Image (cartoon, rainbow, N blue to C red):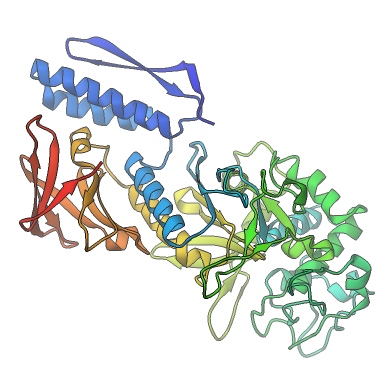
Length: 519
């Protein structure tokens, strides 16, 4: 993903008009940002020597704006990378993977920890994880494709479409359990089919025949409450198979995954790749802190609800395709822009707790931003896919162990906040690089970092639950001196730096309390 490309060269004239050539990478990955960063530093040194520092400041900003495609800001990338690495270690997660795409830029991805029992195979952006309930988004897309093909309608009665599935008949008071009501988890069905498939050690899921032989449990009339139902989504997968004339997994692969070039996404979990490409799953820790290894599941008839696998890089490509298709820019269009808009819009809101659903998608508002997301939670496999359509942001996260916190609270929401705030930053200031690094603030913190944040510095102690909430910003206030910047723009404590005999930054002093620079 980040191989050097000899044809990608930029030219910036500076210091007497002599061009400075620099090579960047084919997909504008993280090394491309460092390449541009190094270029600006080199130009800056030339400019200082020639007394043209003001001009170079403008040139560097122009070069940053004109040359970079849509990417997470380099300062946001570095902060996200550090924070996720600290989360993986402090939460004792065996493996964690992340991928991000912003606008039309490339996929930026990272992995932390190891995916095998022997801790020899590092996690990566293309590591495979069971994505469990994110499978429902693919099933909903399959349903929408068949709806657009005219095979059935969203408001058709599922009891008529699947007469042997034991679904409740329509009533005059509340109508039918429809395709739409199952897609929005408003069909009134119990969460699970009547089989103990989430019980260890077997995790035995029902076959197609077994699933159809047991009627779903109806808890209440349709469209009364939002009640999440794996059973309901599995029945939609059965509908897709019957209408498509092929097994569900085969139809989805041919009609969706292959046209979208999602080569790492499968309608099953490839157990043969466990520990090589597929992350080994682990239980929640016991009181002794130890986790137990868990098998890869075969969801069989429940695969439309919980049986897919993918990588975070592939999930981001899937999310990005949807944003492209909505703008009429996608090459492959298995579902029309109108169909995607139908999937993304508010379809049902619970009358009590106000939870919102599109077709499979969970909907929420964060500040002024509409967020579409779905998470997955299977034995030893947790995942998240989130889209912020108005900002062109797609984020995917996956980890291979259980944690008491919801993955969006633990990782997703803080990561989105960081990335969206980073998107508004001015160009990186190369003069801040000499202050950046890890500082010794023991015994008070495990790690204290000072990091560039556009034209400011951030001070952050790791680990932390939310880096943007817990970081302190500092604005330059003189040579080797900064002031804390409050939200209202007023200035607080002084942060000063000392240098060693070679002129390198060696210590930071916050309100006269010193911290030695470690790296």
